[in-house]
Image (cartoon, rainbow over all chains, first blue to last red; front, side, top):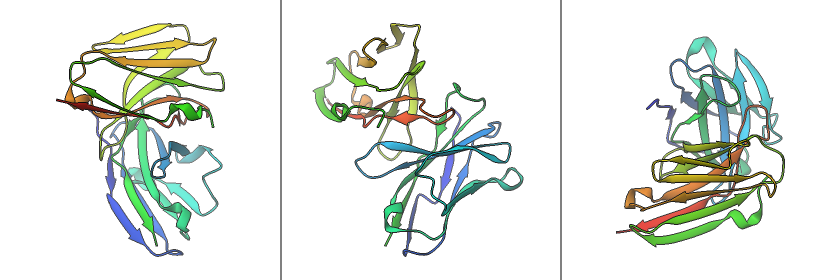
Length: 114
Length: 110
């Protein structure tokens, strides 16, 4: 089936540093999402992105977070500066239509902030 | 949270047995999706049930939806070791993003 790739699989950084998580969505998909999952807790929606713009974001999407997809390359989530509570697995997803279309998820990037 | 605390479960069963897991949701939804997440992988949609359906089947999977009690269930018949995973129900609180429950960890032993 369609595959979403995420790079890197694991990132360890010091608190206060900047980090960029990369997602390579399914090639013909137009809608992109980030979710956050803290160990042992439920996965939570962060943001969705379409046509170069943030369409909707949750309260977890702090001011330190930003997303972009320059020139159809990777869909990225940048955190600057990072905080200890940002440690989690971040999942990227994409879909080819809005709302009720199936979202395809990547394997996640485990972010550890020390 | 959209989901009740009772959703967090861990089930251990033997291959061949059937298993059913439940979840309940607090706010109105027109679609409940069930995802399976295997170790080290992202979630994958396995079955979706709409508010005008009481039951949906796909292979060994069966989902039910009771909109009056705002609850859904997922059953797997004749489990296999490869069914070992965490199963999540999800709805759409947001216009585009999914809201996931805590999940049920199912371990199927040969």
